[in-house]
Amino acid sequence: MVTVSPLSLGIADYSMVFWFVLFQYYWFPELLPMRHTSLFCALVAGAYTLMDLINPFTSRSTLLGALPVILLLGFEIGLMGLRHQWRYLPAFVDVAILSYLLIEFIDMTVLAGMIPLTSLAFATSFWGTLSELVINNIIFALIGSGLWLSRAPMENLIQDILGRSMEYVFLAFMSVLGVVYILFEYSLQSLDDSDHYLIFLAGVAGTLVVGLSLSTYMLMQTHLQAAHTQLQSQQQRFREQYTTELNRQMAAVRTFSHDYQNMLLGLGGYLEDQDYAGFRQLYIDIRSGWETSNAADLTIEDLANVPNADLRFRLYHNYLLAQQKGVQLFVKVPEPLTATVTTLKDMGQIVDSALPPILPILGQLTPNTVTFELRETAKELAWLLTFPVPGDAQLDGHSRVTSAQGILDFSNIHELLPAKATLTLQLKLHWGQLTIALPKT
Image (tube, rainbow, N blue to C red; front, top):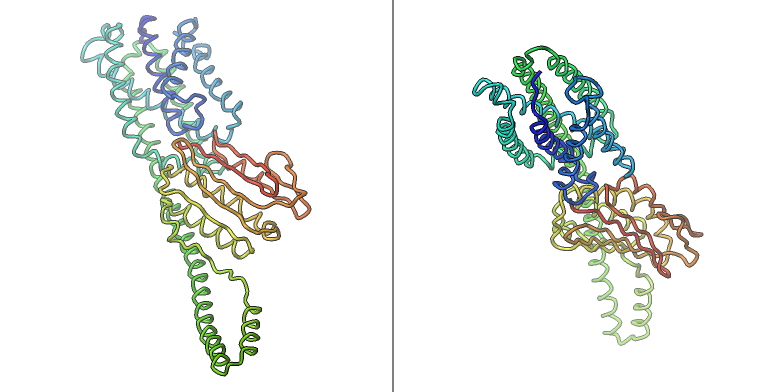
């Protein structure tokens, strides 16, 4: 078995665990309990190193030797439980296994290369360990920089498979591979002259890392293609709805143009005959026949400052739904929006879930005017929905407004809110306001 001094073990533990935790939370910034990622990773790595150094079974290939690892994972899972983030657990475990295999592969590859180039004595010495960690850290930093290019699609993939059967199939597959590799590693380390098996063990780890990375990449590409097809289909439906509304408005304009000419001819005839009584009566008849137009004042081009096509079409779709339910919806969007793709996507899903169910009730209220506003700051994207409420309206908990006309229920939004997002519902005289703030991560 390859053994090192406690000092070498301590600095190796600290470096490896720091990168392990960083890669764990790389795709889950919303799970971090602290604002500064590096500080959190440093504190966790320090606590793990201390436990590993004082654990008398560290040098033995037993379950007690893995006690610091068990405590580390228990601490992370406990944090998720306290913050009610259980839905992220399967994906988090997947990433943790992949992070472990990646770090093991790189560390063993570097160590297996150092031993024949120098010697076993130097590789296991303090300076050998320090040299190995310098090389490891450079490689880890390069990998972290490269992963940044795939961060958005990977986050979208994780968000979309949460709670689906595919997530648990992937978890089972990753768990089996992780357990098999750990048992294989412990078995080899218990053999005499285990340093001779490092290249073989690094090859196994590398094969698993490459295989899992390719599988994840293909899954990501399949997901992106499916999402693109779904978005195109959704945009087609919204455009058809927009075209139908536009054709209706054009027909109304043509009808009005014809009627307008007849009105002018009739009024002009009465003036020419100086029949002012007839002129007055025709004007009264015309005026009494007027109806409030329900033509849409907002067009899809007015939302061009929304950079996300999915959110843009969702906003206009809900605007037309409000028009059909007799609700005058006024949309205010700042220019330009700079939130991330994930934040804009979350906002679109929240709007689609919250607004349509309450439109029938809002259409019965007076005035039937609702203001939809997006506000953006450097740290968050907020949605403010201001709507009328009857005089007997009361707050029922934190997400429902009850009155004789019906119940405005926003409780279905909670399961869509990402971590650190806030929902506030308040009543002011005859108006209510729903405010949802999403952090810009």
